[in-house]
Length: 231
Image (cartoon, rainbow, N blue to C red; front, side, top):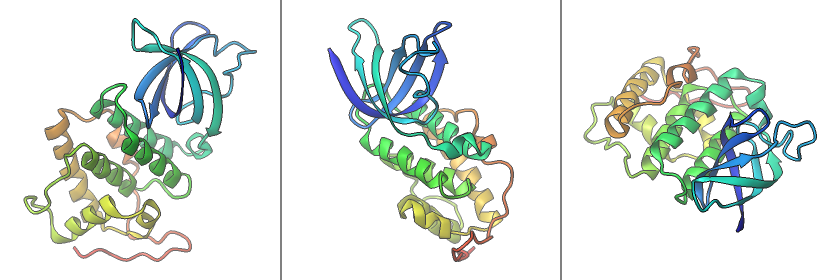
């Protein structure tokens, strides 16, 4: 039976010399894997359509014996070109993809998680990959999983608690107006590191790289005002 879906490419890997396994994130089906047979052949209909974080409409034949299905057709929607131009953006997106793979089950509807990933990628396409992007993603994913931190029980400083609320609740574009201090960034980085390990067992590789190199905090982005959160 042929099914259709809209999704984001989370990961690709070689299956044979000419075929790829494509891991997708979709809103209606969740995470699923498909085989793109002959995708690396020069005249393949998949050529140029399957790369990290490409958004596409696609069809596939569902396997009755495994969770690895057969990809049929792909129609591109968005390629997120900034991820191929800025290594820091790619690192952040890759870590977010690894986190969602670790924290969710395959073939379980994930509309909120899909929208979260789409929002994060759209933000990276228009703004610098500051640490607040990762923190916002982690906090929002934890919220969707029912694991949001209890700020009243935490030992975070008052200003950092306000930062957490803003990162978890504000629209993505509004995050560019936040300007946390270096101390707040360091405190939240440590807090979420421990929180993720405690609730998920481990943190995917790449978090440190996604948060590096150190960026000057409190610097206004062009055309935007910045307001320091209270320490």
